[in-house]
Length: 108
Image 1: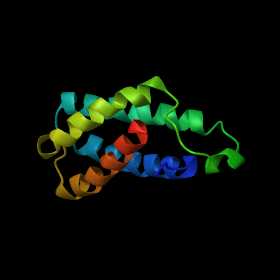
Image 2: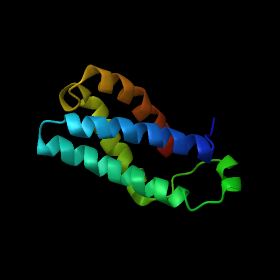
Image 3: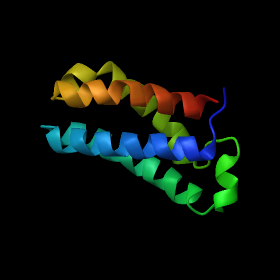
Image 4: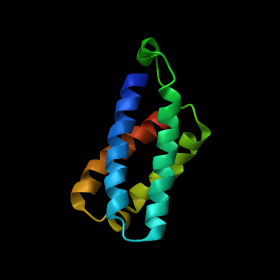
């Protein structure tokens, strides 16, 4: 099933909040850099989507920015390194399904 733009925006907001927590919990610069890069890509995508009219929010979602498409690989890497990158279990538990949702959006 293809997500609507409004659903994609909501999922991105949730993921950004969770990635922000993971960023502040990260203990190394390398982890912070990885998280910041993903946060930046999602923020760029949200910025482009925010330019759409409210009527467009019911349309099918397709990734807009190249950075967001590239973020798929980084999100998959983050998922593989979850145990070492995300310190708090509560954050990791929230992050895991959101990464899957976003990767699904990018893939379609």
